[in-house]
Length: 310
Image (cartoon, rainbow, N blue to C red):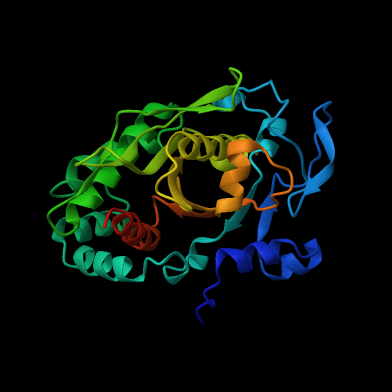
């Protein structure tokens, strides 16, 4: 398959400003961008291309977690672009060298290769760090599960993959949840809680966050998209560095997604002060699903997940 040309964030913003019929030819599937909220806080000056009419100043009905409304989501000036797994391009996100390194270490790891073979054989045996993990994943395939085994085994998978990488390790995936608080002045704001995160050993700086659900994503509608956008916005609002890019990894039932959010300085200035003349948006590129029961999916996914830690 020919590789897509690398485009800058400005080029991709321009593409999203094209009419929907043109954008469709680029295979970008947008969601949550078109509805216009009915609110006394609306303004007649829209922010292109997402037609986000609601503005931060004057909005008081902030919710947290899964209770976040679509009207609150529109404050975030965020476009969610959905991609199939095969569309992931390491070069697009400056991850080419990390992916190459991750692939080499994973191919040389006997425990990881045994894990991949177990998936191919529909078995639940493994070795090394992947042995207990593969047995724990049995519960994820049970129909009466709640979110607990999905969350626990996903963090364990992330940890096992990270251990395959070259030493020393400068960051670690943690089960401990982090609480972000997004404040917009005058006591207004909301909280967002992760399901785990990648933190540096030296300073506990957060490099990626985790979100998990027990149910498959299609059955959850736009609610998960809204919640994940709110988590990233709250993370940025509380910690402005690293700048311009954030990573969220998620597992919903037996499917894994990787979301890379990109934004520029104008969008960040809007988030700080709600200026309506700043028309930039944050783009959340969501790739997936990678399926736990497909060995080729997990082999490909592991390269990305390991590259994130390098």
